[in-house]
Length: 224
Image (cartoon, rainbow, N blue to C red):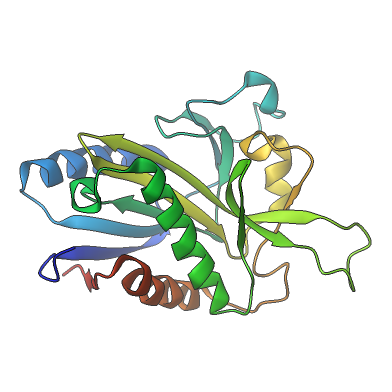
């Protein structure tokens, strides 16, 4: 990867409507492919909503009238977005990464895991399901097992990626009860707050920015 590459960092304040974000991503993907705009990492929050990926099963939408539901072109199944969750949209030219989608997803997972380590949280991946998982503390949890703290769902057009990841910082975890998150019913969801980590969204952004440079080998440059 070229050290001269510029990847912009955008941090949006407030809650960004999902449809507005999708329109912006669609336009930026076209501009990146045409060479008219730099690549982008976009950090934001959405109002409460559910999205259905390309593999979503209708039976996994348990409360269809609770929040708005959007069909999404990303991979994966149903997921929740809402306040307190850091959504990370990653618009990269994968021609710079060997045009290997599987490798790209693993790199996104490694990025999230490295960022979580800043808060002394051990994130892990699983061979049979996408996402970032944490083991429940056997000393404090009455029910052994593991919970999901981060979701991955990507889309690629002409080898430009969009959509990306979502990390649970301090969302209302009860909101996940309206779906079977990512089609996995035998495990729960958690957050940094639920794990006892007093991390602000700014703290998480700093961790994500530092870890991006480490994992991807490119420095993020704040948008003007």
